[in-house]
Length: 76
Image (cartoon, rainbow, N blue to C red; front, side, top):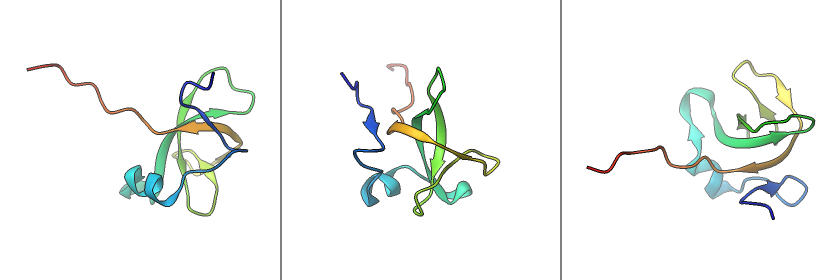
């Protein structure tokens, strides 16, 4: 069961997903990712050139990704 994870071998973020997840300060989109060899998920940026990278610009080998969930809000 994928639980919402999309393998990078299956597909990468499309234009709509990129725009919806765009972070102006990074000039890229931010997603929740699973990195090859890592035990936990993390967030990384994705550029339209197909590169996954962190806040320092270091590239990573991402094996699966998903959109970030909406932030938590308490009920009024």
